[in-house]
Length: 417
Image (cartoon, rainbow, N blue to C red; front, side, top):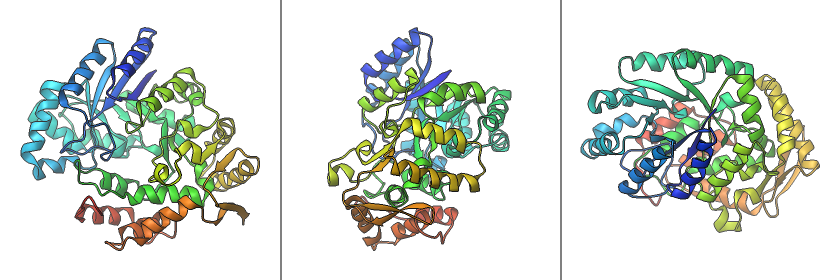
């Protein structure tokens, strides 16, 4: 089994992983620096120097840990024309000095450019590419034929919600091309998110260009606060117990702990749980969930705001995997009511009140945190982008993800918007 771990850029994490390597575990660290070239995260990642990054990767390889550098901003290849000189210098450093084992990309055009202009041959396909079936992989390989070797593929978030036998088909399809398919394990996205690609377009900008307020993150957490059943709807998440059973049933032998914006302590704790195959009692201790202004407003961490009993969730997940989407939705709502009433699902937003209404657990009274977030996203008059995203996520969709992505691509952002 091959496990990917987000690096904290600290040697103490590598020392811990080195012990696991000596015990026979196959490991990879991955990360990127905030730079002129975008990745799948905004500016909330450690800002270290190039020499530190290079030394970190050298030490990892000495310990037998594979290294992966991320260049997976959505449609990142366009930055070659926008910031040609700076981007070329950046990739010259990556390919000639840093020299990771893999470079992760999210669009095939970038793979072609890196192969033709920098001679780079070893690639991982990012989950941002949205590959969820054999045909999606084949289209990528057709577009990059003769331009480097794809060694691994992180599958689309929603694949983790499928039945294990369905996942096996994708694992075998990738294996036939010599590619290791991987599943994310700690993500908090909900299934069939209508704005996921638009969100990646929003955060996939060069360092320093992203607005301070992320309306996607605000809308996402408001969805959880207004519809508690959505806390069970986790795409890109697999419990530590499922890591082992899922590998046996699906044939997937590659998994990814996400969370490179999380603290070193969080990464270390997540590793402990997954390598031991044992979940914490509250799953939100190992779920990557960005909660804007939570610490500033309520002095809380996300695991204090949300509680989801791990054993109860595993029972839910085992049944939900086998259901069709329409049946899964009603089953999720029914389960949420039962877990909330028994104290196995909790939302600790001060003054919030929830009740059952027409078979759903719904918010009756806004809590302090939800009220603040709603005011922030709907009160910004600059461009109305926040209200459009809010309507897509919370209310009735009126525009498509593609239209929203186009709006974002054409927007001029400043750091105070």
